[in-house]
Length: 264
Image (cartoon, rainbow, N blue to C red):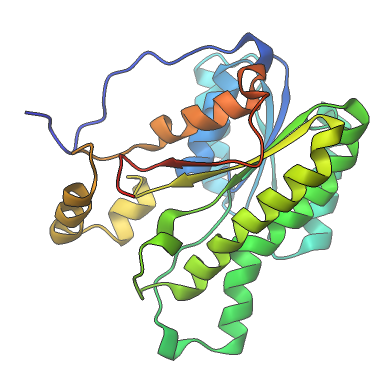
């Protein structure tokens, strides 16, 4: 019988086209973002990331260096709600590493709340934290991708808006908007050789999820809903990100890829 809490043993693919490719990840200090940074680094990519968490960001860099990454990741501490600062940080890192040809719009925050306690200020915050910065990060990197006639933009959405649950409506509504960005920008950038896709996690067992939201009852319900009867881990989720960033995924655009163990 499969242990529902155990991470699977796996030997994942290597992508020669990712070697030396310049990649930017938002929210790269923990969870799915950190897994993406580390996976890109171990593929030989030159990866940069943005986050607010200085200590965790430094830990990600240290892990990559200790593992023998071809390029040690670099990062900037920035609040993605500050669009001017975000775009300035992206430009600064591009000046150091070269123009980005991969963008992973990952940063988000799924704090719990209900519809009746929502205020206009918190509504704005949920959209600013979970959606708005994705568009403006694209705005910062797309001109160079268009000039190069090559690029992959990967927006991390969420299956939350499919759940029909009322424990984070602001988050779920914001995340539903990610698909609008993807579909619109894919049509805009496609003639220039730039892909735009969405990857949607189901319940991914990150440290944050396990510390803040896990319960025996919740996990039981999730596993009952999933076709695969075990936890899904960040290192598995990011394999789809790697595929879309590499040349192997170059024919994919305007698509939504759901990695949730068959829950939906």
